[in-house]
Length: 251
Length: 69
Image 1 (cartoon, helix red, strand yellow):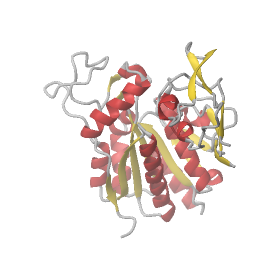
Image 2 (cartoon, rainbow over the protein chains, first blue to last red):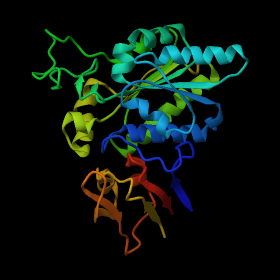
Image 3 (cartoon, rainbow over the protein chains, first blue to last red):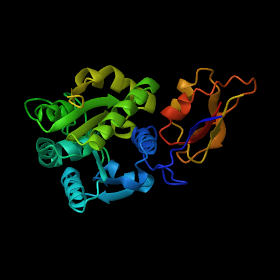
């Protein structure tokens, strides 16, 4: 009996082009599994953004649009509303990095949540700008060494990192906001359950749903895939706790 | 009898699967992969594989294409 196979929503013969050990592959895989489970393949429009997350459309076999840097939630709003005006209810989700969602596109993201747009946003938080060479991002932790903070992030010069899932949970239009990680099997299965719940929120039509995924970036952290996962488990989860911050789906 | 199918062309030698296998059935092969390092191979001569699929769950490259129990 076959207990595991490649999700049907992954394009045939696709080979991920992420760096070795990068959690983007796991994140795309579980999103594809959820799309299969909820039978959403024909009805989904995915919005990818700039950064490593843009590569989503190369691998996911659903309709995809690429938004300008940071504008994924704004594009998703347009896509969702235009289809609704035509009487079609499409399932729309964005797939963004932390620099895209929480820095360049913070206005779009935050106001989508405040408006209670019925879309789902997935934010991959790897604490730097991965694709452009590991510059300091809005979520870089205090003391983190990056190419643009060679002496470490400090509060006098750079200020404090943003805790995206907590901030989005404060918006009244948000129905679901959570943070998950992918550093071991248990957390990957838990992440899948929580992302599925966020997707179901949109299908029920209650408002903005958001999941932040703590992801590794072995290349820019200059660590092995194993040490990157250890860093997430031991350091990052202390700063960015794994919790469901808001869930009003049963209200 | 459980077994997995592994696509060595997709493997990027991160070795995350080696760490999670409860029976240590995955190991480095002699084949050099796309990253210039040795890829992973599956060898189960004593039929120890339980088909738990943990290797497939952690693989970021979907290189483990099938798990059969």
